[in-house]
Length: 521
Image 1 (cartoon, rainbow, N blue to C red):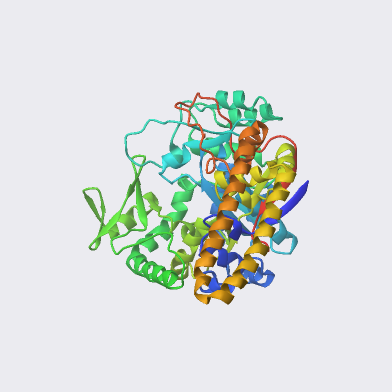
Image 2: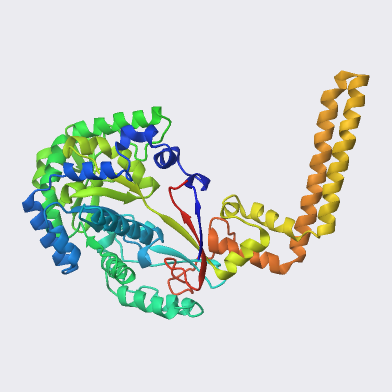
C-alpha cells in the first residue's frame, strides 16, 4: 500500500480555530491548555484525575451490564486506569465513516498510553440522547462505479423530539444493501454483518452498538449508553450541581464566546441570557428547556431550579454540558473528536473549570481516504492530487481535459505563448520610447491577448474531453470515489428505503493507496 499525508488546511472549510489547534497550538492554548501529544502533559492530566473509588466501582458495574465482561473492563476497575473517550450519534449503518476513524484513534491512543506506563481503555459514548432523527436516519453510499446514492429509514413519530437511540425501526433496508453490494469483493460478508445488527424492530442505538462491536472486535472498545438507567442515576448528582450553577455557567460561556470571537475564531454554540444547558427527558421525548426569569420553561409548563434538581435523573445536557457530564462519569484523560467537537470544547472549558476543576486533553481524530487500484491508476494517468477534487467538478474536468489535448497542439500553444511574450516585450520597449503614457493601455491589451489565448486553449481541452467518453467516465468514477455528493450533480436520492443502495461505512476491493488526512506536517 502506498500512503501519503495531507494537511487539514488543504481541506475545504477548515476553520481557523481547528487549523491553529493542529499547527499553531500556542495560539489556542488559553482554550485547551495542553497539547495532546505531549508526554509530560499526558502524565500531568493523569495525575490530576481524582476518580472516586465508589464511582469507579459503580461505573464498571453499569458498563459490564451493557457490554458484558471484557479485559478492558477489568483494567478500568483498577485504580489509576484512565479513559480515552470518543463518541458519535447512533446513525444508520454506523453513520459516516469517521465514526470508525474516531474509534480507531481512541483505541490506538489507549494502547500507546498503556505501553508508556499509563493504563488506559478506549470508551465510545453512544450519543443516544440526541434528538435529531433526520441527521441519523439516512446514509450516503455508492454503486460499484462510485456513483453516490442515498437511502433512508423511517420511524413512527408524533412530531415531538425523541432521543434517537430509543427509536425503533420496523424495517431497515438491509435487503437493498445486500443487493447493491453483490458486485463488491467481500460485499456478502459486509451485508451479513449489517443484517445481524440491524434487525427489524431494533432501536437505532441497539443496532448501532451491535454493528460497532462486529466491525471492530479487537479494538477493545467499551460502549457507553447515557440512556441506560444506571448511567442516568450516576449522572444525577452532577446535573443537580449544574442546575444550581447554571446562571453563572451561562454567563461564563457567553464571555468565552466573546473571547473566541475577539481572537479571530468562531463560537460553535451561540448562547443568550435565556439559553439553557438542559433538556427534559419525559414520556419518551427530549423537551428543550429555556430560561425565563428565575425559572425554566418547557412549552407552557414552568419549573423552578429546585424542581429540576429534584428530577435530575430525567435531565439531558446540551452540547456544551454533555462532555463535562461525560468526564464527571469517567476518568477521562483525553477526548477524541472532529473539528466541530473541538470547537465545542473550547467553549465548554469554562464549565469544566467551574464544575470539575480539570480539563482533559483534546485529541483530533484521524481521517483516511482509501483509493482502490483503479482509482490510484486513474489519478496517476491524469496527474491528479487529492486536493484537485476539493474545488469543483468543473475545475477537475478542466484539469483532466488538458491531459487529453494532443501533444503537438499543446506544444504549439507553448510556442505561441513564448513568441507572443517576446514580441510584446519588444513592442513595449518601442512604445515607451515613443510615449510613456501608452504603457497602461498596452498592458491592458496585452493581458486581453493572453487571456484569449488561454480561453482558446481551455476550449480545445474541453472539446478533447467531450470527444473522449472514457475520460468522462474516469472523471465521474474518481469524483464518486474521492469527493462524492459534493462534486456530483447526479447523486440519486431513492424515494423509499427499498431503492438500490449500498453502505457508506466501508471501502471494499483491493486497496492500493491510502491518503491519511491527519494533523501532521
